[in-house]
Length: 214
Ligand code: HCB
Image 1 (cartoon, rainbow, N blue to C red):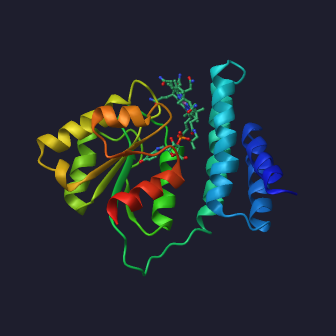
Image 2 (spheres, rainbow, N blue to C red; image 1 turned 90 degrees about the vertical axis):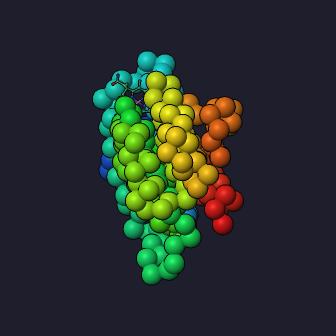
């Protein structure tokens, strides 16, 4: 099977909403020697994007989306074990990452945290629906040099701008870089709110973090 066919198999498995199909496809991709990051981004995440499009067009309903999300999460979990932990190595930098208040979407955010971690960063993942002040408090507690914020809804996107304003008010803006992500975020939005970078996907998040912090 070609790599492209394997990516399609992974994507179709997520669209099928069946956890067993996703796990089998992930095992197959692993046995073909495909890197975890590629399995996630070119296979599983692509399937979840298709689910999103079908949901938007009314071809799939919320229970399906929830099942597809659960199946994708199981696939990502299976891959986490294969990602380098680098526990003994000195960490490159400390990053706080989370999904902003009012927003429960956390699949993409968790992928970003996992990939940052496996690239050698110390990541404090605050989870989802995170009260905005918690981002600031975690920066103070850990001395983090970057905050990553995910928002998947137009209604929660402004939370990213608020955190930047709060960082300014609390005298921390110069000490910490800000990365924003999530489907409605764009480079234009990042520029508008004064974020240091926008990352479209997890590979970009790792690349931007390395550019800004190392
Ligand atoms: Co949800 N949902 N949803 N949803 N959902 C969206 C986001 C809509 C766009 C679908 C639509 O209507 N067209 C929409 C938002 C519309 C808007 O903008 N206003 C929507 C809605 C409305 C809702 C509910 C309100 C539905 C309801 O209850 N009526 C509700 C939200 C409740 C709430 O949050 N308060 C809801 C619920 C759900 C679930 C629970 C069923 C499920 C989430 C499960 C979970 O996350 N644990 C879900 C899902 C799965 C989606 C879609 C279909 C896919 C999201 C996803 O996981 N994508 C989404 C449609 C879409 O996005 N097109 C839909 C795959 C991941 C891999 O991509 O973009 O999240 P990603 O992450 C990327 C990238 O953005 C970047 O890297 C990641 C990896 O490549 N990135 C970062 C992300 N975070 C980063 C952080 C960084 O620091 C750096 C980079």
